Image (cartoon, rainbow, N blue to C red; front, side):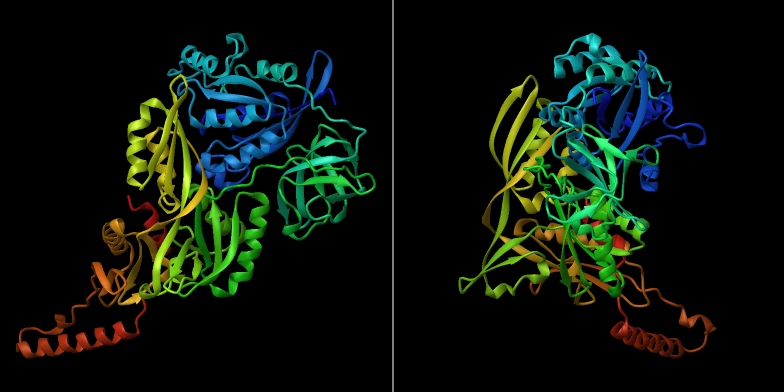
Length: 595
């Protein structure tokens, strides 16, 4: 056990984690020859296309120092804030972390929030300044920032470059010397933490775990704490570039288990595996519960695909534990699911993965939250989407959920952040300095206002420095109205939203303008209207595509032309009665990007 080191790589987005991981794998000869490619651990097509890490990836390397052999378990993590849940799970499986900072950009928001996450878990931090080969690099300045943040000595900071391979040997040496070996007891009852899982169509569900105490052998009977079900460990092993089976794994190791589990409900991330013969008394403390930021309906384009969509979401949830979902239905779209996401990028990625990995074509509705509606008889109902709202004359008042939001930021960005929060109907509760130039601000805000674009705007105006956390505090009475979108007089319930009365007219107008751009022209005029109850507050028209029916008239009497135009007019009228307007998928997403 003393020769095992478990560590992860944490950094802000685009600071070169995956490239540096490539150099470590190359130097330890874990990946050689034709297998070596850029960002070798980003194995999803989507990750390569967008150049971001979406999933954390575990891999084991062999390294020799002073004649001793060491097993290094590396976990490369995402940098984008929408995938911070991945980072928190990876940190739980490690004893040390490489904190990577870009030499040209310095310390940024996710650097700080991921660092605090690592410190809370008592990880040994090894600071590394990456991209030192760039002309724009400012290593001295960045060193000062790191010393301020961590309080470490200057000589503990390693200068490196993922591109040229500079500093890679020093990093490997530092991992062996500074990161503590895992502290478990190999003779105690088995206790292993599940930190990730994937679905394999041939082998069932593969769970990745870290053994805290005890050991596990191939063929042994094991059980999961959350459901008390027993399984045979058909295959266990370590994670190299491919999975490598082993006969036995003991405390401190990171590995995988295949036990023929077919149902995705049986494996939960954060669960504890123990043996049936000699079980441990208590499960390992799992991860904190995930808090969805954005709720939206996800519907199959073809109604018959509902069950396939359920199966696809369950398999996706195995691989992405931050996704939550429950069934719901809509008049326009049929049966689907109300899903909770961590942010808009997360929502986009899930939609894309459903299409690529499971061939599911889905429509996503406008994101929203749940409300309490009180009727005039004193009854109360909880409404999750605007189509479930009773008629306006039965409603006494509506209450919406309020949150207590905490924003930590640098003092330079207080003005724009205040403006943003107040424009979202926020009320400032308190603000105070926490250290140096960092400030903590607390607001009470309606959850509905932060759902769509608040998080993205906060990141933009604070240049990625502000970190944001919230919890639901209470429900408060609010002047809310239901905004309907009508196409040719027919309401499209998937585009309906509940919004504050003061914002309704502006929002309705912008929505009509946006839909006018996106809805394709038909053979007849399409009226796009925004309405509150029976009152129309905005209107746009998509003009019809006309055929020149009078082209064949050379001169002659005007009545001939008029007769042809009248005939065309009758046809258009008939067409409008039976024609339907297809709303493209882009229109549902456009509502989110109205700014």
